[in-house]
Image 1 (cartoon, rainbow, N blue to C red):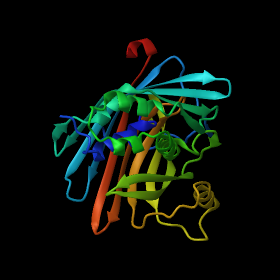
Image 2 (tube, rainbow, N blue to C red):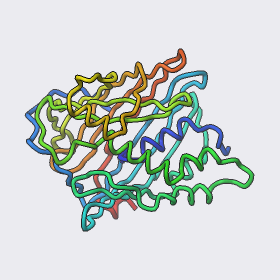
Image 3 (cartoon, helix red, strand yellow):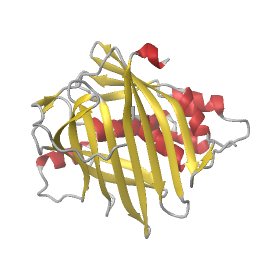
Image 4 (cartoon, rainbow, N blue to C red):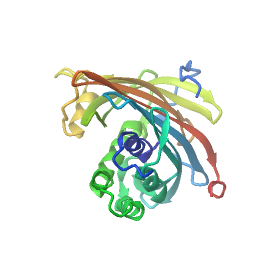
Length: 299
């Protein structure tokens, strides 16, 4: 799903050019009050297929788009869950022109495995070196893949995967929910050669009936750097993230729909704008659940 690498690795497809090798609008009306508690209950008898698209605009490099399809399944473990995700399709374009990249090959060759706690708390990537093995397999002789080696290194893959899970799901599961309740996460994204750090606020907006059943609706926005009088939840979020320096002037908005009865990432739309060196960079990402199918149907 867009659960993990689908955004962080998809974004790399958008911004990487050195290694070339030549939905309905989410503006729901709340239908009922959310239940009192959101539990992490992934299905063990189906795989989740998602489509994801990211667009980057800014600087003199035009518009870069990347798309992928991911298939994600969950296996129960003694103390939690093993998430397994593979990419079945990946593509990149520059100003509307398709471009083949080594990133596409890497994404479709290695399987991402992530260990989660029973309540959905992120633990770690399992065998993070698998990405570098895939890169070695697809890299043509004589091509400098140093930038990709850095990105697909075990340390970087671990950090980007943890960041993406926290931004999307951290602090949402295993807690009581009320209409208007807020939760927070610190996110990072590379734009214009710099790392943009932002503080995301997620607000419970209600529930909505979808083709996959009832879903929770969360509105998303970015906050300015808080002062000493910030709410305790904000201060705790920043402290747990290491008290990072937030990039000034970042704005973002979006919506996220999560299944009510079981873990289903129904939809997510998110747009971020950051003023960098006199220019405004925009990163927009959209994901949508295509089907929760039995594993044998995904072969």
